[in-house]
Length: 319
Image (cartoon, rainbow, N blue to C red; front, side):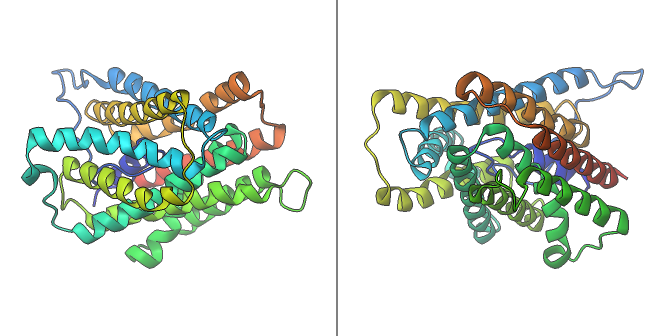
């Protein structure tokens, strides 16, 4: 399996609230010009920047919704929009192209892990400032590296173990356990990052068995089915505004997924992956404008530490 596949999956955390909606194949970048330059590389970078911004909009809207609706219901509404879009695609493309999986069990397992990641992430948004949630979620690539040892049999060198350790130091700087700033709700973004990392590892186990369209269809349908089981226990009748916001967060998430895939057709995933960290900028901006929250110095320092360790891990994967 190519090293770019894991960074492709890291980028594709963008639909349905950090859920996995893609297979493990990286789309081939556009063909090169005679001088060796790829014609759409700058376009790919711009598309990736736009994808991160749009996904951050989706998360900000989801946080607004949690003021009046339970996080599980917000997750369900987001999946309902995505599933509806995928059903429409399935009707146009045909069931054979959207539902025929070589590994349906792993598709369902991955979908379940993605639901856990989405639910934990939106729950954390309801309890914590956006910037803190985003900073803690950056640990997921490091968790993927750690999980790859028992689940994939990979051998991790000392340098990557050191990067993981440094990343955990950064997480501790954000969490600050044992101090008045620590909140038990900070466990939720860690749970989201772990669930997301497990979904990525399952994706790697699936290798190139299914097409992107099949994986997206399964992700939407499995997510909608599982959240439909949970939502009756917490259901709150939404008003017109909440319904509109639910539609918006679902559309933003789906648009972010589309922009991510388009970006990957113009540039390598390993080049685009660091752009994901710009989501912290958007989280700080939306957190301040919509909720009046600004991160403190410890959050900035911890986020910087996690980002540097993550960038080092991605750099080692490219070698």
